[in-house]
Length: 351
Ligand code: SF4
Ligand code: SF4
Ligand code: SF4
Picture 1: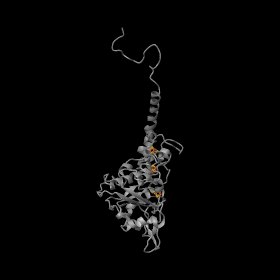
Picture 2: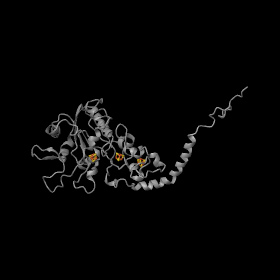
Picture 3: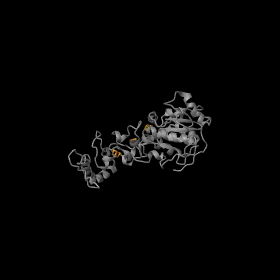
Picture 4: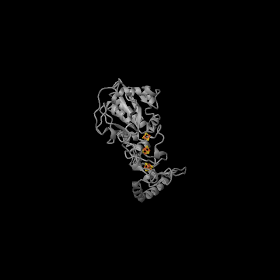
């Protein structure tokens, strides 16, 4: 996707991060495990070139109550004094569907004029257009996620559903989606780092795919990076969760899911669902969770592709096993006998 961003270099920036969407705070918790870079690296200016960052996240903040909320109100009033990145965690409920006019699904702080809870919807209405960039962290904020599944009473949706596809931030960017339930820690921090470098005038416009995800993070499937892919190719399938083999028959959706955790791991390169025994349930995807349920059943396309593989997989496996035995044996001429049996042909006969 091609977008045009502001060319003005930013020297100081706030990150206003709300997890008051329909959320479990799991993305905030996940990001505390990031190391490429870590949150500490960013807020302590250990990364060269980025603006000075002021982070406002309720789980990580030292301030509470009015003190914590002050920069949010200042930003909404255009009085923050520096640009800000608006990070939204959790899905966005529909506040227009109450039967009780005083009711609300989710709010953050009170409106000083009315004394009533200030809904997340109002915060988004006021902050998103003023933000240099708007980032949806986690699948709930990106696409609706678990809270937006069929049968939910809140009319939940993702941030783009709420703001509209034509939304552009003050920095000229659409909503940037970093999905995952929760988000992979370094995926979020790497995205944030790109946005910070872009704001500083040191990076081009962040490349996003048609689902507004960073292209370099979500361009490949789980299957393409999976430690178990060789088992799949040989039609060697796990029948229970204790097996190290391919898990497609016990519920893995990896072949059709855009996610990099099998390559990247989860913390410091370790983990990544199928690599460590968890079937992929498609948690990064716009169709999650409804289109992947029931979890742990064989995906509909899985039975077809595994049936096709079973035609040649066992044959290939047998042939490879024979070749493997052959190459596990040293060539026969390596011995201490009196004759040279390597097949060496001297150019000139010995005298
Ligand atoms: Fe929690 Fe998952 Fe939603 Fe993040 S995406 S808020 S981890 S339910
Ligand atoms: Fe593909 Fe899943 Fe099998 Fe890994 S476990 S090879 S992602 S189907
Ligand atoms: Fe989610 Fe699948 Fe990626 Fe695991 S491998 S994080 S379940 S999309």
